Amino acid sequence: MNYNSLTTHETQNDSISITGKSEDSTYWSVADIEALLDAPFNDLIYRAQCVHRQHHDANGVQLSTLISVKTGGCPEDCGYCPQAARYHTSVENQDMLSLDDVVSAAAAAKAKGASRFCMGAAWRGPKQRDIEKMTEMVRAVKSLGMETCATLGLLKPGQAEQLGEAGLDYYNHNLDTAPEYYEEIITTRQYQDRLNTLQEVRNAGINVCCGGIVGMGETRQSRAGLIAQLANLNPYPESVPINHLVQVEGTPLYGTAALDPLEFVRTIAAARITMPKAMVRLSAGRQEMSEAIQALCFLAGANSIFYGDKLLTTGNPETDHDRALLDKLGLHAL
Ligand code: SF4
Image (cartoon, rainbow, N blue to C red; front, side):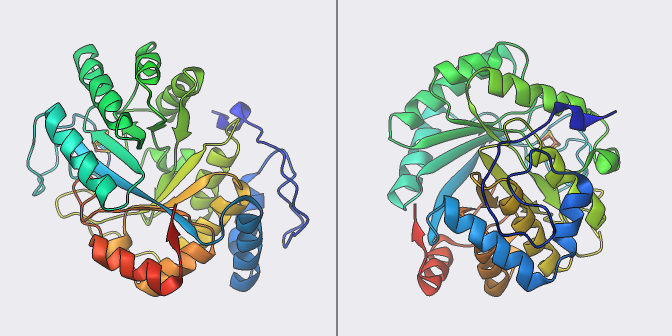
């Protein structure tokens, strides 16, 4: 299947090119992005930093807090995920949180400096009664003055509109990996299902948050393939989380050979260069990353992190550590 037929991305104006390819092109082939990933590290980071400075506050980082509003028991088989019911992991199932719990968590996150609050639920997709509860949560979190994001799985026609009417700013739905590697990771939903949900989100006028996971045993070409899919969406996502696999015992991907951390930095740089205006989110996996690698990710154009000591179920650096790191690097919260 040719997923690239969905494509073409915004034109950008940047003259710095290390590969013969610049951001004002209309289409990024996998080979174009492989050329970026293959470039000398200094050239790649320099180009990413130049693009970053053209479009963003060079020293600003958005702080987002993530909460799991319904945990575990998911019928899907995503090979990295401890919330899949079929894998035996230490994650305990938890029914949907109450509205009060969610609002308290959002208020606490805001008090600590987060400006964006993301709500995740482990479903194949929400039922109508779930959408009704989620719209209440979105309205309540919005009323605190925070940006809202939700990640609830596949959306049926009409569901995105309901979330949009409640004021949802972003819907997250990741492509996870390149099309050719996808079946190694997930078999219970197809790549096209994901693209269909992204289209529902676009049609409802909600911003798209869409990225992937690296370190799942994929090749550099597959990492390029993922970035090409994202960059060629029309338009490309406003928000691009780049996750590093967090290996959880009991999941099929536990024990996957570790990715060279500099390869992760290269992937961030490729995302920044090919999607200049997007927020590039340094997402899962930071707890296992050194401060030096995180600093390189910021240099490569990452400008958002998850802030709070827990992601949906896996660990994240303590907020005090993150504040100290931002201070050390002279970065400020957006
Ligand atoms: S990633 Fe989401 S859809 Fe996949 S198993 Fe985990 S909770 Fe379910």
